[in-house]
Length: 232
Image (cartoon, rainbow, N blue to C red):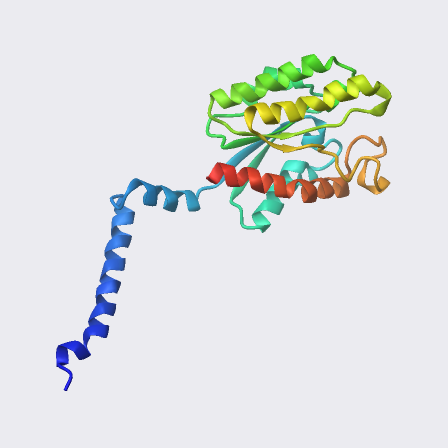
């Protein structure tokens, strides 16, 4: 015959597990169950604050705020379960040097990461790629000094600027990504420029609302990789 104590072992063990679970939960709430566990619990519920630092392509030239790149990207990320807020720090007509001049006040303290999209206006104005490189390098290094990670969105040069300019300009983004170990999205207008005319405004340079949706759809995997780094 099995002793009574053995017959009740399963029930007693279940009760013990439940008590241990309650105690652990209380310790977590009190912050005494270990810094790593407490930090993980806090991180799960925290909203990541991003800044999209760019020119008119980021700002949403001639588009309502609801159709601008940062807003559409934020909605797409939230739909996939990411807790993010993306501030729109795009300024139409801005060059890389302009972005460097305003980076300190455009990216406030407490920012978790920056999506950097600049250089298109440099290219359109034929600015020496060395100047653009120096400015973008300055932005990345200044943010790094503040402990703010950067994701870099690149730009291709117009073919009428010649192969030498094209090579020097487009190398900027790959070189900086390698030097600073950045997540790089090589061409911000991928799938929009030279594609369906409905994806661009009549000027042929800026994305329409549908074009912004295409940009977001294509850049989304790279942004999720960037978020994984931030969370990691």
